[in-house]
Image (cartoon, rainbow, N blue to C red):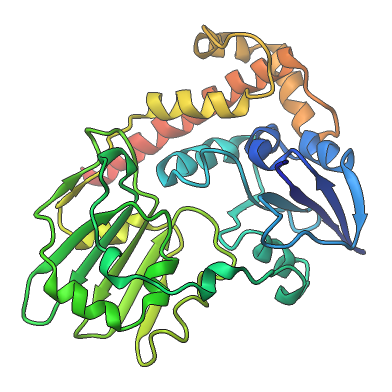
Length: 345
């Protein structure tokens, strides 16, 4: 058992590789509080020398480049599977990591290793999953329960309408390994007229779009996949495969309103983000959203300055930082709204 993570600090003379057995699923919590506290957290973890985890054991990780001010990471319990929440989290993260280049590691540990100049072979462990045969007849089956709807499959067939399927598969690997034999099933099966994720209050985690006449496949996935580009390289000779990373919007636009996503306002996303960033803080969170007014004082300024120092933030400091983060975020959103209105005039 464990939630293993590689944590790397890159500096002018190389990199320091650290290991935590438990940080992978709580990494967004530690990351949120800025470069200073996060560096302090990383340095407190076990020094591994140069012994990298592999794709089987690594469930989260981060690279913090002190010279170039780049943060590359993946992990958590919610962010890896919810594109909308992850985008919102990054909007707030840009406040506490001001001036940094913030990136999500879509290939997981492979992205971290590549950033440090480490070869893929050092971290990729071949699994039995890729050697399993794919049952093409089941790849388009609808989930028995709408709450388990995960994947959007769309196909533009020759001389026919754009077909829509929604399945329970949590990733696109099976579709990419299927090969052209899947086309027969796409052409023969009847698709859905439309689908809504609203009733079950869930969000899709992946999608794949086939343009049969153009021999093109476009796919996206919320969770990390170290070998996402390799899955279909051999299975679809003569086809063009395009990985859109986590860009679900392109497929939604292609479907022209036939898929309705769960509507989440900023307040909903803010509440979800707050649960993530205060995961390690004991005590109730009630009333914390009203704390923003207190964040305007000198105490908030002093707490905010700690984000650039290697200091662990206590509960009071985190409350002040959160309040100041909200104030800055809302001020920035209001300014963006004013700019948009001016442009529309």
